[in-house]
Image (cartoon, rainbow, N blue to C red; front, side, top):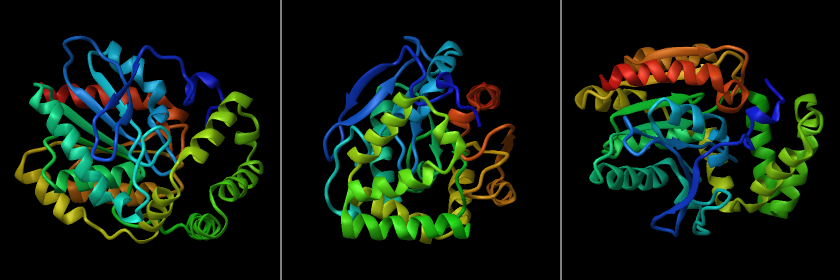
Amino acid sequence: MTDELSDSQLAAHQAERIDLPGRHGTLAALRGGPASAKATVLLVPGYTGSKEDFAPLLDPLTDAGFAPLAIDLPGQYESPGPDSEAAYTPDELGTQVTELVGKLVADGERVLLLGHSYGGLVARAALLSGCQASGLILLDSGPSAITDPDRVAVLDYGTAVLRDKGIDAAWQLREQSLLRNPWYTGLPERLRAFQRERFLRSLPAALITMAEVLRTSEDLVAPLSRELAARAIPCLVACGEHDDAWSVPTQQRMAERLDADFAVLPGCGHSPNTENPSALVATLLPTWNSWLA
């Protein structure tokens, strides 16, 4: 995992910060791309994430002729959302992704949908609700709930603190854990400050529901496989070689069940988009170009 600022959520890029219409208010987004792009790539972040998780990808994708569009989901960072916990399930968020893709398609754009981690569960739900994407990428996401006992314990305890003591106490708990990680302590202070601000601006209702889904999500690979096959939508499953949320073998089996391409990205764990973005881009571009040929 790299600790260089250039490979982080604060990587410099030429994308424009925009607001998109959404049912609960505007969706904060970063948009890049040439005037006439091969396709729009809708980038959906995971639990505790945001559009900035894709910052290192924005310029390379633009340079390759694609139009990246990275969003904050409702309840994340700069996108408002309701206080209802029911609003943040994959089905509810997937419906909003489907609506956004529908607007892009209506404007004449082809859309490739990429979901990272929890965003993969949202992207899956979007496809199952009829999303008009021309391709699906599941990045470090899984077929069902996370089973790693350490991660499950963190989600359990973090949710209890969030409910009982609020977002500030939940961040203090999270930061205490991070400070035991040499990777985190080696990060530049402004990147650590960004991660602190982003977490504190997230809605507790969103964090609570996402954590619950990560602990309990059912296996929906079979219906997704049928949907992809019925509409001839190509799919890629990709993951970091050291992913500790869903194991590499678990994701490989998911790819086989989806009849999808599969790629393991070297030198990274659960977030290749920030840990080894060059390897991720080198995998995505030829895949997408083959899909669009």
